[in-house]
Length: 284
Image (cartoon, rainbow, N blue to C red; front, top):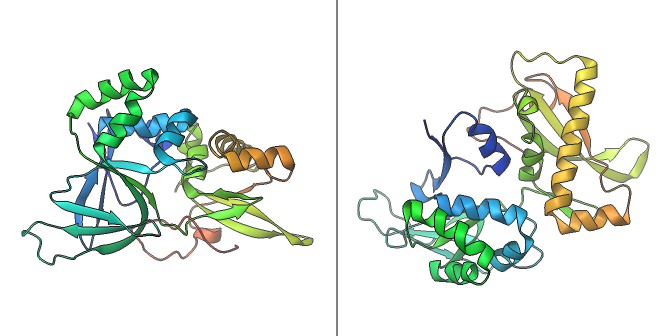
């Protein structure tokens, strides 16, 4: 079985977790008020995204210096879906098919994105021998010389702490490094909260919701919180230069609190019935 997912971005850690059961997991990008088929992942884009997490030189060559976020990467057909970006980096979409009931021109989806021509990517990959062979092998699976959509998602889904931005995908990567731990967690949300007794300080807080039917005792919750904190801090230190630099400058930089809640309790109580999860919320 192969898994097809959509609706929101996913991390490579979550893909690895799902591929313990599925042969492959591939994501598609679309918008319910446009079309569900704007772009799709290929073996090449999955290889590229994984490589960006490990190779800082490739990351800078593709994303530019100082970019700590890792986008979803899709290929798309510009003859069916014409894409542009605004000066602020927001994605504009025009559907060219006459089969669309209600076509929209230069529709702003509200996602932050970059576009990359196929030939520009090929030139980057040819510049270093260590990138050529794995990229060529991945490309051979589908062989589509189509442009790339590098999708960052909503620009406001972040909190800033000690000069570094923390995104929900950073938390998710920390959660899914351990399959045993991932099987206990239903969802999470990220907040920035005041530190009790010190009105001048705030700290990131990760709220974890246990799955329905999962019972974890008090010592187990302490251990789960510690493991998640360690996983998130380790991931941020490896992928975010701003966060790594802040670790060197202050011992407060890894001061991330993790709280564990039963299913449907705490910040997860009485949530509205939405298709998409809310990963960023106000103080609990």
